[in-house]
Length: 96
Image 1: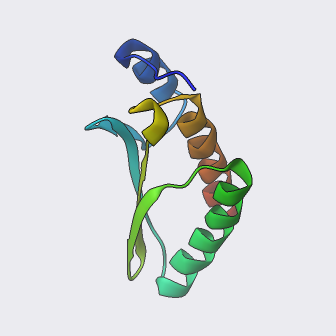
Image 2: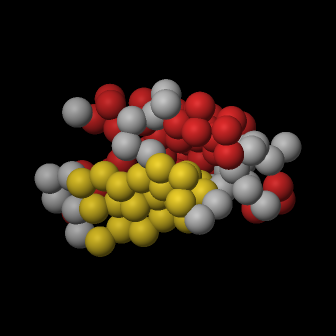
């Protein structure tokens, strides 16, 4: 998987609301009504991550979820990260 350059990343970010390119990775955060909802969404995301063979660096505190995506093998952001980000967005959208 080839690492994307800054121009490519910025162009692709236009298609993702709420995501930013920070220190070599795509990042976003979500807030839910409570811990149970946050954990439920994390579980759905986890199954999709496993199916795609790509795993986020993420953290959860009570009702908040922070996600950071990059492709370690490519030492940067690749198409793989954008594919997972779009999948995460569709999961979040289906929960609202």
